[in-house]
Length: 102
Image (cartoon, rainbow, N blue to C red; front, top):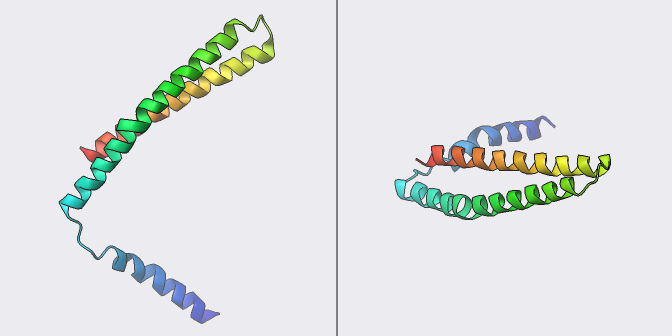
């Protein structure tokens, strides 16, 4: 059993240094940044924003047509708050990504 622990310890100490031994080039990093920018900022951010807007509209429709039913108004408030929370997370993630890239 001690041999297994030593092997695990040696692997956890030496494997990360071996994996990171290859020098990074600016061209590789630029390609990764372009991929992140085109995938997240170019695709996921607009889709997420549109979906959040649709959910907010649906929540508003449910809220206005609830007729005082507390279960419907509660569900509508949950939809609206969830969509706004998701929208804030999307914007925060976008700001973090832009800060890292630039």
